[in-house]
Image (cartoon, rainbow over all chains, first blue to last red; front, side, top):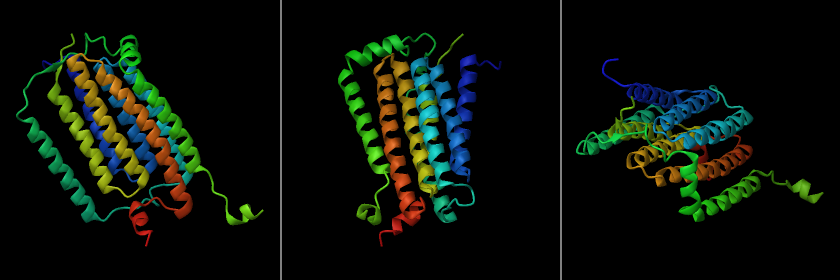
Length: 176
Length: 103
């Protein structure tokens, strides 16, 4: 097919879809649609992980991001009853300036890449490091201490979220 | 047949995704959308880390992505708790409105 391999076709299609959905996240007015487009973007990124032979990360990405985090976002948006009518919009000048800054930033990044060496191929097909076995070995030997710290971080985030989200007692309730 | 993809393409893709996130943070007023754009930027960086980890055949990059995901989960939990608290007190999560509210 036009001299491209399957991997290159998949890369192109997944990249285009990821960029398109990411643009839709920013440009859709309804927050609920924004969340759903972000979920689709995350699925495209998970596809990229599979293409890079990082199977464990692909599964964790779908479970943690698409499964847990985005459901949390959706839950909060529905709790606040946000929709396209209540959506505040920035002034048109601000949005145009934001777009210009983004364009200039992209120009700088692409320009910085111009001098980089070409054709260092990422060979995802034969790689074994993304498997649970190899990743687990590294995680529990070399990175054992950060792994334990991450558990403390998650616990403190849990306690913090509960403390912040708890309804504060009003004056009358304290009086009673 | 699995031929490789030049690393430059991955850098370009991640740069574009990251910049879409940056533009989203600057152009939107809804605090939750801003938060989602930050997630998008984190994911662009994650993808690049995995690409380089595969390029150099080194598992450290993928372990880093694992830790970034753990930190992002913690960040989202606390951040959304703060946002729901702000909404309960001010009945709005418009960041332009909230920046004027202290006066």
